[in-house]
Image 1 (spheres, rainbow, N blue to C red):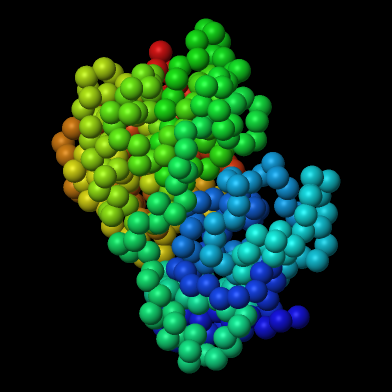
Image 2 (image 1 turned 90 degrees about the horizontal axis):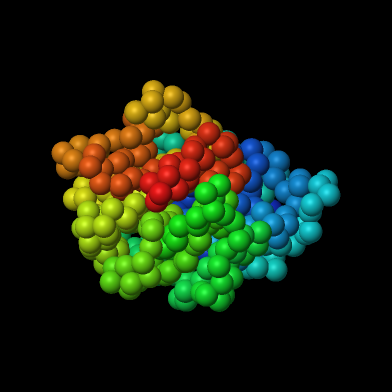
Length: 381
């Protein structure tokens, strides 16, 4: 088996065995504490630009399948695990993890001390790294890691954002290309409100949930201007997740300011944002965002709902957050992370605008927060 090396900007080098594709990639090295859901993690566009380490020691034991994908391909730059399972035991499996990654060009490394790597990133923070099967010189690799661009200040959304208008059909596990196709799901009243979803790197389980809640969903590129969004006469606007730093997305922030004023304030159109969408809403309200030390990535993060006092166990994947101290007086926190007290949700006191930092669509993960889709649906009447 080929040798692979993971070099970090702090000078640390891990040597292991290569699996998946061969080559060399750079990225921000992060970790995810989920015990399952590696295929959903691999195909989540929010991980673009990152080399993901799984803390659970055995990965690949249930294979991969088309139904569990969160997008059309993996977006992680590299995949780091302790041990690759050679045995696939799942009746739904359609492929082995290593063959899947090799076919789609994703580098993997196994056999390293992932506990040491995670402990290091928890102490020092997320680190820039190089994963390589071609250059095995430690000095060269560390120099490349130091010189890699990282995530701060980069617009990664443009690399994952779709370039066409689509719709989501009920019962399908992918986005339909024809924007005229309507969904077949209906609410108990028979009315299917029209949701325009701005795609900045959206997970597929989000439109699935919107359809299941009784909505018709039209998906637009996140770069779509406010005027073109409002021309589609939405009953609600959804702002998706996406990768990287929200601060370079000045155009998207301005679009949301216009939607809040001309949509939510002028016509009562509800706006709901998840993850990056939450951060962009915060920026649109005038708040600032900042980079977390090592981010939140996993399926077991406790969050307190400030309106009900209930605790939700949530799925999370983000490296940036909104500073609650910079929120204006008419916007208040709705959810707080119990691990580090960071902001996990916001809502406008007067307008139908709200967002959460975590992922209520789970996939894979707990279902504690699915009520948010029902709340969004209720706002649309």
